[in-house]
Length: 153
Image (cartoon, rainbow, N blue to C red):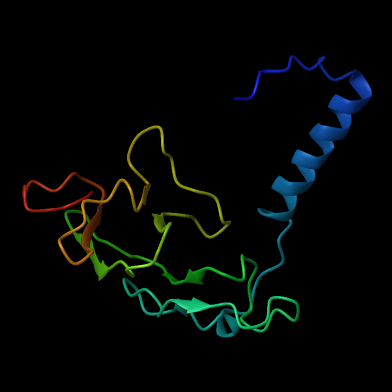
């Protein structure tokens, strides 16, 4: 069992350093980010609306062969959704048997998660209601689905 250790508050110089790091990160991931060539996305990204690219492991993270940043032992699949009012996107699949952690997260184009204070924007494997063979069904929608048949929303 670990005991909590009280750390002294940072001094002004350390706080200024930390704030600069945050400002640099936000700038580099928003308006400071150069436009990307949309034809050069990683193979796991789909340009077709409402379609997720085939989950793919990083093949060579040192040379960035798959065109992104991430853990080399995680399979990624991504795409964008475009829904009209009243529409929903159904995401279905089956969890691999030996998968310890999996999640679905809604991000914007600046790699920022959507507003989690107003609605559910992510689900991990433990939060999903899996079927007997690991199957799942997730609905992405501006409104909560009225059907009680949805596993997760």
